Image (cartoon, helix red, strand yellow):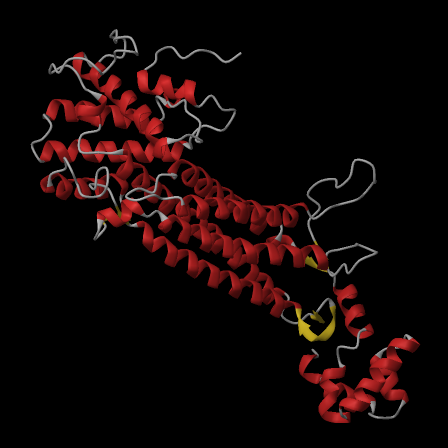
Length: 461
């Protein structure tokens, strides 16, 4: 049975939301809540600088924000991430908690001071000792500009973490590319034997593919720095002073350490939330390639005796509860499942972005939850795949050589020397007689051993 919290700082609006959204669903991501709090901290400072909020109240709000950002009041944020109303419930949860704690600080600076019951807290009176969740903490704010702005800031940080994990994965592929640079192998197209190549070349191609997807993520990230904050309810800055907006972005940059700026058209940013879709689409493209690479790893490591078996993946755990000694490619499998999840989340985000109506992209709660989930899990999974799979994968050199020599891959290299028709005839004979292409060509006296080696010499060590 879950222990009850010692004190409730949240108030009536949060309690109503608890009853309206009593879902068995994860709570709102803590990093998102913290970002909303950062906005409130910057706003309190900005309002004080603009002369719109007395400095004592502003200081109390800032102190309350700092406590939340240190994790001192995590238990106060009780709502599931799935909810309606643009995320107003989450927004008011933050406003109420900050107002109640700031009032406490303002009255005495001691945590033990008795606070009004939650149904009344922050909702009555305008004395100098009271901080109101709407009048003070939410001054010049609307859920409609705060919540999308908070998600943009959160997403910037998560994309940066993802970028770092991609650096790790790309470096792992590049290191293996050098290590495998002289290992000749059979290249395959249409799941059939194709032409010779090197294992190093294959790994280098993976690294380059991921660099391109990383570039796409970085380009999508640029859309996140323009905020609608200051636009209020519909983006026309009703009840918001220009002086406050000027100070707000100065303070927000200090708090977040990010070069954030107001969008050129705040109404556009309030009515459309497709900037989040751009990020999600770039992430989906990345995960598409990651899943393809994971699929390659599963195919190339298949077996170990009854499959291709050219890659030896680390034995991370037992693969079966019934088959002794069986080891499965668990990290490549998880990486492909990451793509399935991110792709599904992307469709949700697309539908929710399209569901914007008139002056508001109203379906923000599900966009927030899905985008944060996709970014967080991708960063974690990429890091794990890099360190516990790619960095320690081993090439099965004997198996690789066996497949190459038994294949018909050298036929393409023989075209310029013996002609397409002769090479095709040798391929058919090699397949029907179960001999190597080298053996057939030499038996037909089409080439000497030295001439054959010279013909395929570009790929030989």
